[in-house]
Image 1 (tube, rainbow, N blue to C red):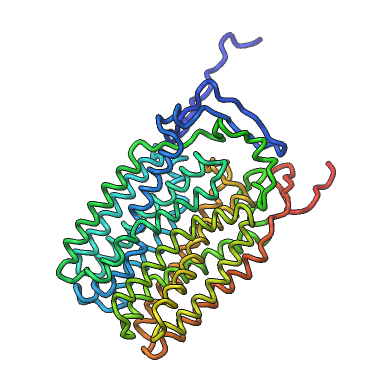
Image 2: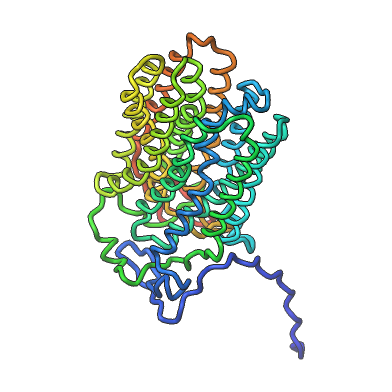
Length: 482
């Protein structure tokens, strides 16, 4: 009646190889807080990687600092690129436009590589720094605008995106107890790394020394990136440091409590206006920051400002962008991320309008102060919006098929739209607008952070999502009894 031998089950395709992560030891313990969030407490980072958490952070910051020169140094080098290669202002800015588009679009890529293949954060950082070094070499040696756009824009944008976002993912994994501040530190290192080089780029770089300087800079980026990326591994899933109690941290009074769970991309979009507003804030603030970064040096030099003054203002802008990210993240832990972001964006609008009024003949101390204000506001937007996204929708640390999306990375990816608006606006300003009207267009750009400040002030935590059978779900609405 029954067959003597049952048929063999069909062979299954083996799952994709996961990214290398630090494996939890036997003494790890799983706990849950009052909201049901799961934590794997211990073992320590030193037991898992051989390094303490401060040492891990130092290496992460070193890698981020190595590639920041591709963003913060390009505007200072534009006048030399024009003189050395015979480019027009538009041709000189096209490589940076492509860079901004690609770098912003690469936000979700490191986590996607880690979920679907063998490329962990260490490998992504090494690959990214190699691409950044190739980009720097290309822009110093290639006089063809198309070759420079491909080398600097495509290779450099992909490399900087891999490094920056791999560093952010590492910080989120190893510092779940204070990741807002640590994310600010990553962004701060990215902006502060090129600060010592900016005066030399404005004052000491010449068309004759461009090729040699780009080669030396490429080698330096490669060495620092390798020192920061070799052997880096992501933290285990749900890992929590053993010296901190996650349940006590969950009960701690905070202006912005963490999300109770990870949202899917569809749930996040349907939960209210928070996610579209966050995308818009990043795009508008990024447009102002990138526009100021590349247009201000050429604009100030064209209006007859002394190169030393221009170098001082640009250095102050980059310095404030780096230190402001860290300071704003510290303040946001007490005052609230949304409140802090709205205030800083409103200050950015005032600072941008002040720059437009003072750029031609305003005193240098005023220009420096205004550059500091704009730098703090535009720089702090990135870590704060990423932290707000995590607080509203979860970190999505286990992305991939069937898992929540990397919503913080997708929100940061709106920087690509900001690059199109900001760098594209700079190209139009320097190429098409008469010189006497430049300050007026700089003043118009103050409307972008003002609009972003209004959106930030109106951000609200999304309503709860209730899941119905068969994958049907609604936002902020009770399900009918079954």
